[in-house]
Amino acid sequence: MISVAIDGPAGAGKSTVAREAAQRLGYVYVDTGAMYRAIGLYICRLGKRTDVKQDVLPYLKDIKIEIKYIKGEGQRIYLNGEDVSEKIREPEISMAASNVSAMGEVRDFLFELQRSTARENNVVMDGRDIGTVVLPNAQVKIFLTAQLEERARRRWIEMKNKGQEADFNEVLEDVRQRDYNDTNRKVAPLKQADDAVLVDTTGYDFEQSVQLVMDTVEGRLKNVL
Image (tube, rainbow, N blue to C red; front, side):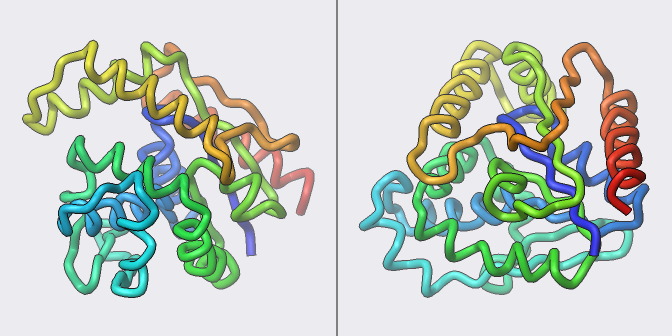
C-alpha cells in the first residue's frame, strides 16, 4: 500500500488540496484533523473545557468515530452515528480541536484508526504529525505551508463564503495562536519531517497548489517504487 503524508500549519489548504490529490490518484483521503474536531465537538457539547484533561479523557470511552466514503460526497465524519461533517467546521471547534490534539491520550485513541486505514488502503492522509508520528514510513511526505497572512486570508474567505461573520484580524490572530499551540505542544508538535518535501503555496491558486503536490507525489513515487 502507498501512503502520502501531508503535514502543515492551520489554513495551509491541506484538506482541500489533499482531498483533490487523493481523487486524482485514486487513493482514499483521510482527514485526521476532522477526527480531532469530532472529539472537540463532543466535549463542547458536554459543556466541558477542551484544554483540561480531566474534562476530556474520561469521555473518550463514549466516543465512536467513523469515516465513511459517500459516492459523490467524499469523506463524511460520523460521531456516535451522527454525520457531523459540517458541524465540526464551525469556527469555535477549530480551537477545541487544537486543544484536544495536544493530549497524548487523545492522539493514542485515534492512532489505530488512522494507521489501520493506511494498512488497508492507498491513502493521502493530512494532519499535523502524519509524516513524523502516524505514518513515519510513508513513501511520500509533504510539508504544505504558506505565509501566515495568506493562510489567514484563505480561512477568512472560506468563512465568508459559508455565510459566517468573520473579522480578518480575529482570524489572523486565531491562526497565529494555532500555529503557536501546534508547534509548542509537548506531544507530537508540528514540524517538518526530515525526509519531507517543503511545498510553499504562497501566491498560488488552488489548481496550482494541487499541481505542486501532484508533481511532488509523482516524482517521489518514481524514486521509491
